[in-house]
Image (cartoon, rainbow, N blue to C red; front, side, top):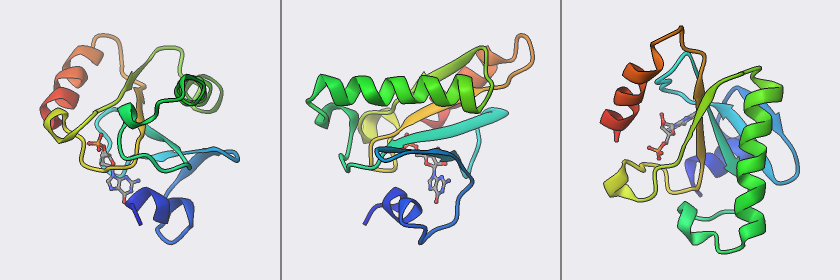
Length: 118
Ligand code: 5GP
């Protein structure tokens, strides 16, 4: 079981900000922006490029956008996906990072932090 499957199953605690039949979104345990939420498909795939169905890819992105705008109230935000260990992926259950909430001008330095985390 992946860490995120345990969160979905409520075997691990998390702060859930959105959930429906297909997706869950919860706060990152190690936030790298004032708002840092992970949007996770409940159907397990280990990395983004394992999802071959464009409708599933679209639904993941549409859900991340909906969470950012409607549930986190973010006007501006960054969506990021690390695909593979070499790109910084540490949890092998596909997820989209939703980052935002910076004060004016802070987003660029936060971008560097996200890349450095890489
Ligand atoms: P990745 O580097 O794989 O793209 O991102 C994985 C993210 O999962 C990291 O930002 C990390 O902080 C977060 N994370 C790892 N373990 C947990 C956990 O147990 N709970 C939560 N909420 N986030 C986690």
